[in-house]
Image (cartoon, rainbow, N blue to C red; front, side, top):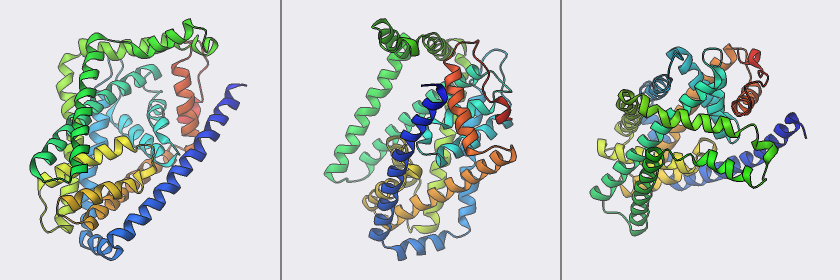
Length: 364
């Protein structure tokens, strides 16, 4: 089976799964709209009105700070201009939203889109490093929000157990991440070496082991070589979460009788949990309404407020996705070309240096 046939078969396997998740999410979305009272939700949306423009303006900080953080993760002579990083970030996120199971496409797409500015391996390494910083910030944010929820509100027993379990999970994940980075445990290349040594997929792994090891060396060595950047990058990631809190507070200001920064902080931290756990569901359709609606009920805001908040969040995502699509069209690209370029970029990154260049003209 050649590479083209292999890629088509992978796409065919992914597409039905993505469609199934989308349909299930849509059904769950409709159910929670009906359960929360469509009339109340519509009234909330009317109260927000032009305030949605303010929500969009605040949310614009998110791609800006993530793109800035990405540019700070390049090393040596490789420099990525902020404008190119922001365009790639917006297009990559748009593709990730629109393509079934886009989580596997969005990051390689960003690297492929800037390959004329920086080498592919350098951009993928910088993306991996930036995502590690982002993941650390998410873990700390979820931990803080969960602590605030437990200390500030009387929770039902199931939610209390879930919150404590989340705290324990976050602590364990942070501790494990610290141990892995501190010891520079090359678990991915180690796994490939283990499989290769036992004759499993040797033909496939032959060209990939060295590249994976090189990528791990770049990631693990970043902190040792760039200690001064650690806090600035982490602060940029923190701004991403602060923008989310400000966005939630703005929506609550228009539709709730008692908006507080504490409530906005807790709601945004729970939204991070939903994003992490249900990343594979398009637009977190249904699950966002379910989780946010149940939490706002516990926080004495009412289920309709939570469902409205989830709907406004989807509208914001759609607007920024439209911006990404517009940038994509301006470059004369299509979703199919970007998805194919991202897949080929991921393959090229794990192939020998002598491999042919993939579809560069398509990504210009």
